[in-house]
Length: 90
Image (cartoon, helix red, strand yellow):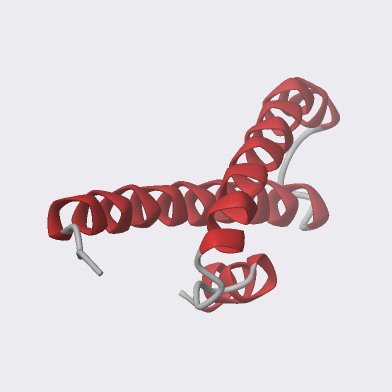
């Protein structure tokens, strides 16, 4: 069996980038929720945030789909739920 070190390194690098993007989107959604739930925004500002939050949800769906397909090939990766917990912790 031949092991492709460069291929594995590229896969790990792209997986790390994907995980970083997932965590960034999750944190931004949490920040938006905190602002809205905390009553820190005017009603007008909340309405203006709507499209941005929709874009974050779309990005999260796309990233999640990519990550789940990667995870199917590499089951030792964290689950999406575990990544979400990590995003909340730090």
